[in-house]
Image 1 (cartoon, rainbow, N blue to C red):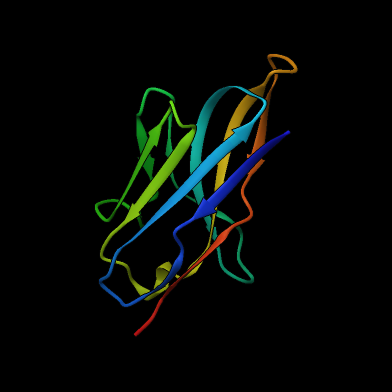
Image 2 (image 1 turned 90 degrees about the vertical axis):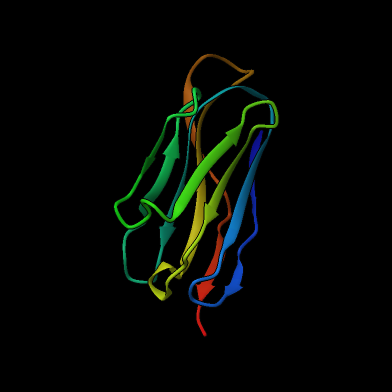
Amino acid sequence: QVQLVESGGGLVQPGGSLRLSCAASGSIRDIYFMGWYRQVPGKERELVASITTGGSPKYAHSAEGRFAISRDNAENTVYLQMNSLKPEDTAVYYCNAELSTLSGPFRFSYWGQGTQVTVSS
């Protein structure tokens, strides 16, 4: 069994910063893709940032220059540093990981439970 547990969400004023963390645990063999998505009511979940095993990041246009994704492979953890936050960044942020388990080599996608980020004065 695999779990992804997010932390670090909350209420922040415009222009402020937050750091999200997502720790994967359980019978993990290898973690490949790790990413952060966000979703607001009535809209589809969208990719904010992703990072490969080797550390190569990709960002949505809305996140470029303000957000930074990183990962600690030894701790199976991915982070999202969010700076210069705007009200339109308000959403539930979800962690996603593509990984294989000790049961076999096949890759599966797992999601965290989500953490609320609210940017408001």
